Image (cartoon, rainbow, N blue to C red; front, side, top):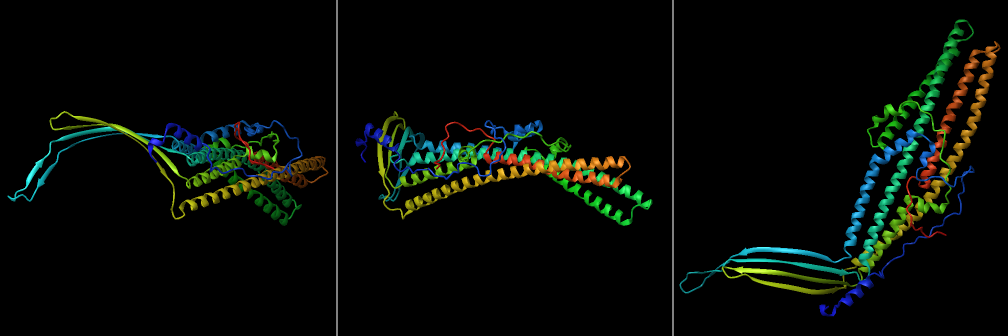
Length: 484
């Protein structure tokens, strides 16, 4: 194309046409969202549940402190943050291709040539020595590829969608981290509570063994009773190392989550602490709200947008490309003792290229991009189904744990009542001391199960908030995917 036909008005018109992006591909995925939850809890649901700082509902200052440290020092979050910076830099690089480029060049040198002419009649060569020449030149060169069919714009959109996905990946890592810290902390407190109950049970077993030894000497017990009690004591004591191991493992895991060596939290968390009595309120979200709240769904949606933009960019390679260039500069040449000669040059040009034959490379690239779009769209649908499953399972786990805790609390009350009755009878001389010890042991066994159920209720609430995607702030202006 001759540059004299490329007027400024023509360039502006072509630039405006490039913004129309005729190769754009839609990125909407229709999802079938249920109207309500099938297994939602029948307890009172709070309209104002705080999804951002849900763990504060446990009203445990130490848990709050651990989470603050984890948010500041966790290595998974540091890695995810670095990925966000990398993706944002890639967006800048992709958007730079939309603008003209301007380069500056400067060169200089000195030249002296010695030529020899051979073949003269005398048989001797003749040397020709040219004067020394100094040359200096410099200038500017500009180049702009006009995005006629939106390929460059779509590449920038794909990079922006990938950057948004990396941000959602950071949010997902934060949601998972908060749930892990809270779960491990609650399980640690549950194990420590069970350890205290077990230690009291062991003391009762030892007391019962000592009582049987006294009875054996008095002829009121036999060796079989002693052997059974010894077996029961040893089996009860064997449970203690299991709980101790679980306690140490949970402390070590919390240390890693907080970005510290595992042993750093030994002194802080090894002491027996109670389970938090308070729990966060139940959040009130619809299934469709997960599309906005859960970072993994937002990440999957950004992957669809990036794949759709990449497909449009691949299709743009089928169409012509227009490049406009301009350059200008100044050069100076000094030969021998003569005054230097200076000149200025400029050039304007344009070029149009279109694919004719490439052995199917462009079509193959388009087919691959189209298959990629189908993959991420199916993954988006699958991720939504898994999110629904995640929430429903959390509802079921919370309801089951709450029912079990309620039943075991009643059973613990009954065991306490039975112990007090047999103890009162023994104090009046109408009962057996061994029966008193057995009643107390039965009560402790129920208390151990109640402690496990209480821990499960709190952990199930953490799982529910994790399933809802709690633990980060939703920014305004977020568009939902198409739902029906």
